Image 1: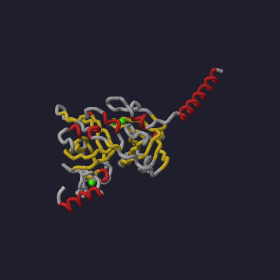
Image 2: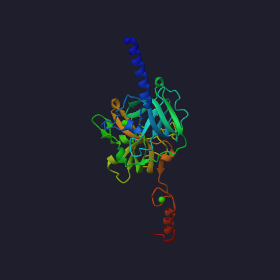
Image 3: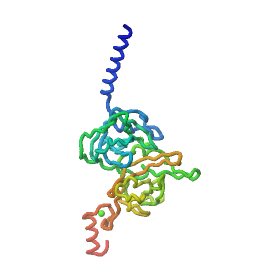
Image 4: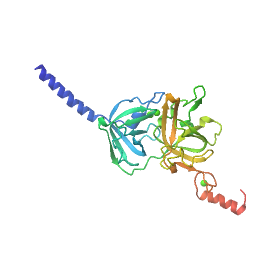
Amino acid sequence: MVKTKLMILVIVLAVFGKVSSSLAKPYSIHEIQYTTDPNGNSSLDGMLIGECSGGIVTCIFPGTRTRIVVQDPNYPDGWGAIQVKDIDQMGYLDSISVGDYVRIFNVTVEEFRGTTFLQMIAEDVPSVIVVSSNNPVPEPLVVDVNEIAAPVYEPGIDGYFVADHSAEKYEAMLIRVENVVVTDINLGKESDNYVLQDYDNPSDTSFSCWASDYQNIERDDEQLYHPYVILNQRFCSVTGILEQYTRSSYDLDYYQLLTTYTGDLKRYTPADINGDCMVDFSDFAVFCQYWLWGTE
Ligand SMILES: [Ca+2]
Ligand SMILES: [Ca+2]
Ligand SMILES: [Ca+2]
């Protein structure tokens, strides 16, 4: 009798467990990324997520372990994007395209070298389901360079560390900085980081950030940088995905803006006469003024 009752209890618990997990509310990317931890780590680190409500694929990082970057358009101001990685190289992400709206199932939250990942571990039977395609990619969020500030060099230990992790809310999001100039190169773990300094604050290093072209599909594989990236090059804007890289064994902790194609690097052009980063009739008007009267 006791055995039968126990059996029934086990069945009831099993069924109830199933029902409650299938009814569980999906986690938003915001719920996974948002944290008050001063180190920026997700409070869900290590947790298996049954369903993430997902967002729009903004970028695909090819490589031995394909990664996609997913941004939830409901959270444009922060904590709105995350990287998803096919860590067991099962081809889960092979048919995913930029602009797909995706939902994500059975993935594990993992803090890996500073970046929050949704890891697709084969034994958990993970999946990414495309809800709709050809959605517009969210507009890049324009921030001041000091909001994603470059790390500070500590000569005592020959390392680079961010002063704080206030940039964490922008991790994996599409970010744009404007009116910057390349002031240093050959920095970071792979010596592929460069400094973008605010053009209007040339001597204040807190008004600078680090960028890298290692995920730029239009960079020559033999080169560390996109050909536009040279010392003293001034850009109207630089757009990319923000990624953190932390490795205590290398004495490094920094955020880097990852450009993904040539269009992310907008240079000033001579045709932009009034220097507002657009070539339009207002430039033509300036031109005509000089042409007619030869002076301002
Ligand atoms: Ca992080
Ligand atoms: Ca994070
Ligand atoms: Ca212009």
